[in-house]
Image (tube, rainbow, N blue to C red; front, side):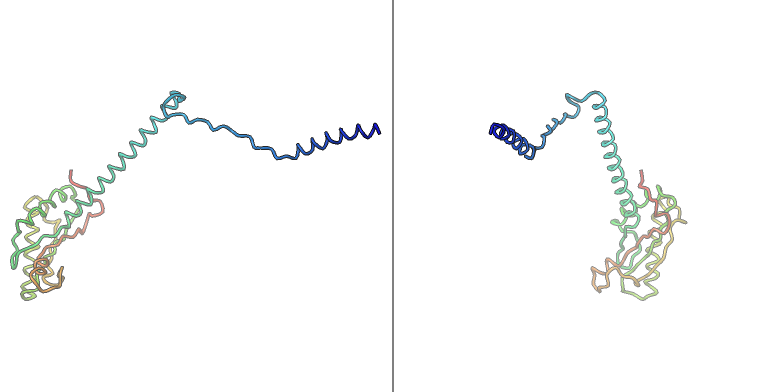
Length: 199
C-alpha cells in the first residue's frame, strides 16, 4: 500500500510534465528596430556622405532627363518649321506677308543643318487648265525657293516641283477649299535623321 502511494505522486508529476511539454509554445516576438532618420542622429559620416551622393546622382539624372526632353522638343520644332506649308492668293505666286514668317523660320534650321535638303512642291486650286496650273504651281515653288536662297541657303539644297491641281489638300469646290489648295509644301528629302535645332 505504501508502495502504491509513492507511485501515484510520481505518476502525477510525470503526466503534468508531459502535458506541459505538448503545449504549443508562443513564438518569440522580435522587436522592430526604430528607423534611423536620414542624415540625423544614428547616421555616421559615411552614412551621411552616402545619402548626399545618392541625392546628387538623383538630381543629375533628373537634370539629364529634363535636358533630353527639351532637346527632343527643340528637334521636333525644327522639323516642324522645315515642313510648314505656305499659302498663296488666287492666281498669284508672290509670297504673302503671312507666309514670310513661316519661311524665315526655316532659314536658321537650314543653316544649322547643312546636310538637309528640301523639296518644295507647288499646288493650285482646281480652277484653270491643267497646263496653266502646272506652270502656276512651278512659279509658287520657285518663289519659295528664291525667298530662302536670298537669305543664304544654297540653291542646290532645294529642288522644286509642281503638281498643279492634282493633289488637293481639300477636294471640295468652294472658296475655303481653294484657299487651302493654293500652297507650297516642303518635304525633307535628305539629312532629316539627325536634325539639330538652331542655337
